[in-house]
Length: 364
Image 1 (cartoon, one colour):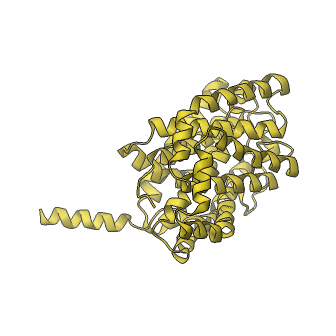
Image 2: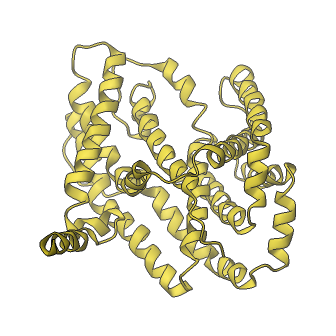
Image 3: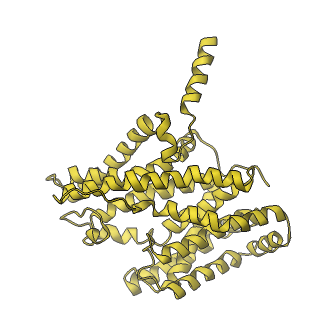
């Protein structure tokens, strides 16, 4: 297996989580926000939602694809016991802690905002994504280790040959089309705690792993044909936007979703596959920021929505408040307090690093 570090995959994960924050803030300014448990502004930015509809059919599947790819790299130097232990620490522990202690915080803020009686309500909230990922690992681990043991066997050769053609990735979309035809989701973008979200994520996680496993042919294909995929998704989005008022038939949306993702993979492979200090920092921060962002943006809404300022400034202010507050909490609390680190998906190494630095400076 290659030891190559894929910086573009790290960047896409960071970018997807950044878009998730903005997307969730945009929901606050929609008239239906309360129906899905969000604080709702008295004024709306419904025009903003038209932009968000470009994101909502591929942002979550992209994260599942990237998670499957991440598992491939995590398996390179681990046997199945080591991997399961590592995924338990990195995914299940933050999920369980978040279920009990983190998602309840934004519900407290929701109750405060609407002057409701305060009640403790543990729930998955936005952390449903982590629960799904851990289940996928359990279900797919036998297959993935079989493929790892098989090395350059027949399955890999067939996948590599298939992915060398621009139609290869598009064939994958047929599995997603079949999923929506069987599950019949009410809305394609309704992923959270639904069977559609579970099976869509399962397929994306599986194929994310298989794309990396198949070798470089997939990446060469999406690099070479990225504008084909972007062109296809532009046409499909136009159909969905103008003919169906942004909510088109599931089978068309499934194809559009994957075309978006293949185009993004191609662009990322061309422009983002390079190391940087910024990426190193953000790739570590992205996971804990994902865990805490909901109660932070709810807190921002609690203080900013009542202000007598233009609605667009409220949106910008909540975005700024969420970004700055998440940075402060990550940098000065989660990153530096040892016992909190594993609860937010970080390695328990900060104090050790500081000790090494101190010892080195003393020697000098």
